[in-house]
Length: 262
Ligand SMILES: [Zn+2]
Ligand SMILES: [Zn+2]
Image (tube, rainbow, N blue to C red; front, side, top):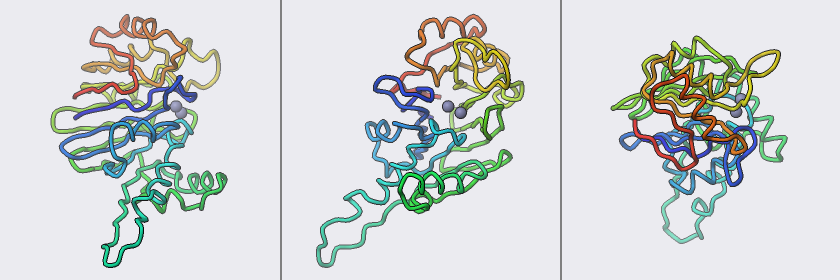
């Protein structure tokens, strides 16, 4: 399984960066995990978007799904679907990738599209949309997918993706969670957000510090830890060191364009 970081920025992009998005490939299956702002342009740098078999969205915060709108526009309006008419030319078959979104997301996507001046069914028309529940298990080509709810400000799911040679666990956005540790137990690659420089001072927790991400990786006995959803305004070496104090395995900070083999 090959994982390419398309976007690792938090809710505001790094300089030249993109929000949450990862390309996961295995034996001819191509899956996009999250599709935040800027991710569609990053996808186009490494793959033709028509090669994406399925998109999975962890939760409906803008930085994890906003680029579904331009992705849908490409699948609807790109010139390749409307070639100059030639007599006898066979019709062009427009692909309709699978889109797996949390329960209730279809209605939210209709509101976003309509509010943005697009037809309300702009995304639903371009993708084969299906709402998933936390208990669902999906088989997408050569990849198997499981979910687990994590504590965040909206319904959010950690995503496990297993291929022929190993498995990766993506925490999405979440505050400290013993359940995430259990869900990720023994995973080969743990991809955890490390958005905060300090824990939120009060109220509901919804994100992690790098040290907390390291602690989760240690308790999950992960093979390696990749910190993500981390701003270029935060010192990346400091973040790595903070995580490494808690987790003795390999720790890296995600960079856009980085490739991980699992
Ligand atoms: Zn979020
Ligand atoms: Zn986020």
